[in-house]
Image 1 (tube, rainbow, N blue to C red):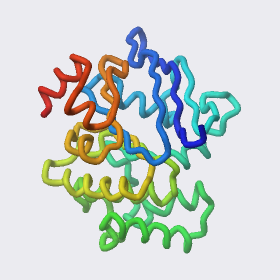
Image 2 (image 1 turned 90 degrees about the vertical axis):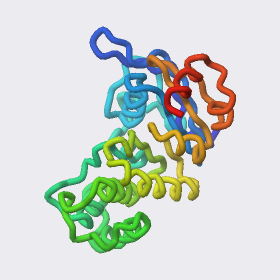
Image 3 (image 1 turned 60 degrees about the horizontal axis):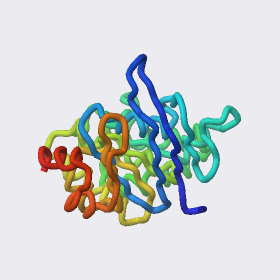
Image 4 (image 1 turned 30 degrees about the vertical axis):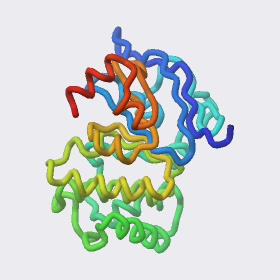
Length: 244
């Protein structure tokens, strides 16, 4: 079906002799906001990094709009433009100011002119409330401000899908709210989002679907109400009893 953006089949990943992902099956539909929850070490971030080809799976298939991204003939560089990533530790260029951080990928990868790149950067920096900081370097910003710039940078590439790898876990508690608000606003635009998160409020109130991972497998998935109010798997109930 054309509305299936990602179709993951039998995804396997090992680190030496440890199986991190064990035969993962998952479908992501266009416009969904899917939160991936679970304790540390359950395979959440590894799965996300496999989707973005930052990790090479040891088995299985990842179909993006029906095309196998693990095929040798697949163009990984053009794919990463369509599938943006927001990292836990921001990954901004410390030697560039905020505006240039949001322009450089557009110019180098999308081959946009400096004028077009700047116009696009300003649009998205304004969206995340960071237009007043365009001349600041990352070291002059708070953690929450850095993450908002990182989100603007990803959006400036006009991605088809945006992946978030624990975007608030490196932030001080008072900074978490401002980043979550930006993400809530994005979710309302219909952007397809996959969010690895420890923020249960976001998962419960913003997601269209929640995936609970445990020891390298998807132990349960469903609507927020199904997972949070009436979980079927004992491991899901045990996890939620500890974090809620």
